[in-house]
Image: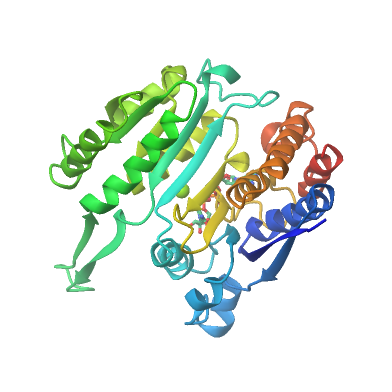
Length: 354
Ligand code: NAI
Ligand code: MG
């Protein structure tokens, strides 16, 4: 009767990330007892409080500290007193690059009991997507710079980096996913009319990869028109593959269409498992509600379910998904979805349904 053990680095980070991760850990504790696996958790204090007291978000050796772990469970980063480009670039974006977490996978479903945004006619069967976002290069490669700072001639460049290697591996992962789903549809989001270098390469990579997946029916959409299609015709979409910037924006739209950003999950995957993958809700630290104990924990709980699936705990992942879907269907949820529970109450509602 061997118990499987997984080593997890826990980084709650900032704001409501601290609250939703704590709630999620309570759910995982119960689940692991029921499903006979164990999580060896190590907490890391990386985040804005550490930055404000020591001057750095992480120790310099953080890649070596995190590398031995099977996965990272992450809350959010962002603090009212720290410019957002500093908090994001000192913690989250370096992990995605250093560990080559090049697939950002964001399932979006309209779940029973959750009311869709008023602007869409979608019912649960109409909205069942996976957004696959490039997560290591593109518009968020970090290249660029500033000169003549503080003068009227101040200049800045923000350079998008698109490599054949980076585009192809991501697009291939998305086609592989699409070919394993019942509908086998894929939509490539692009902007190759206006961005005539990087995004033309992006399109060409898709043309090449698609040849290996004759069973997948795919099309291309310009990102601006894609926003309209997501709202007007959600049932026509299945797997959606996007660049880093486009995927960032479209997944917030998708989260709103599917009810609330508070339930949207994400996985930053390392497909060859050569480094830890990172699982986190799509939302940020939510300055407006942090510290109040009212954040919806489902985005983090769903991300933890994706983590268990990635770790091979398929039965536990499925059990957790059933439990939080039942809680939502029963209306046992937080105010962002019209419920009356606080963060702890919403987590308890999931525990009660495990
Ligand atoms: P946000 O996602 O933190 O909040 C947007 C809105 O959604 C707010 O009104 C918030 O109250 C609401 N919301 C978010 N999560 C919720 C939850 N679980 N339950 C109920 N309501 C929820 O985005 P915002 O306000 O643009 O950014 C705040 C900070 O978070 C910034 O510093 C930003 O840079 C950072 N951020 C960090 C991310 C990350 O760590 N991956 C992602 C997005 C933003
Ligand atoms: Mg975002």
